[in-house]
Image 1 (cartoon, rainbow, N blue to C red):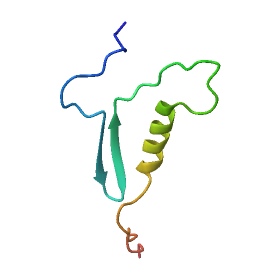
Image 2 (cartoon, rainbow, N blue to C red):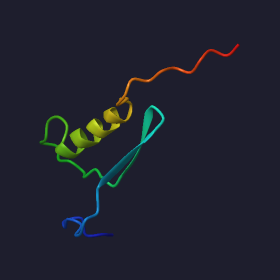
Image 3 (cartoon, one colour):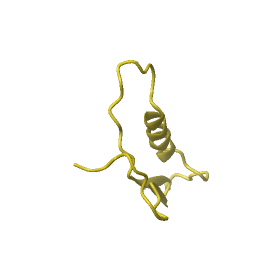
Image 4 (cartoon, rainbow, N blue to C red):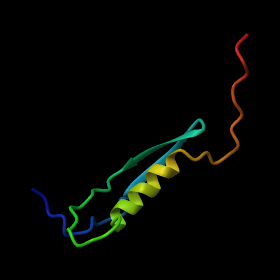
Length: 70
């Protein structure tokens, strides 16, 4: 349905992330392309997506747990 051969023009980011408490919120516009049978391992697109997914769970600052409920 669309032209996937061109790169989006303009200053539009492909990934936006923000902090929410200790965790992160991420919105991304990466799309996975259908691979070929001759490619072994993860494609570059899959590696970027895996990196972004794993980065979501990493806290940037030490997190202090809430006080215990009495």
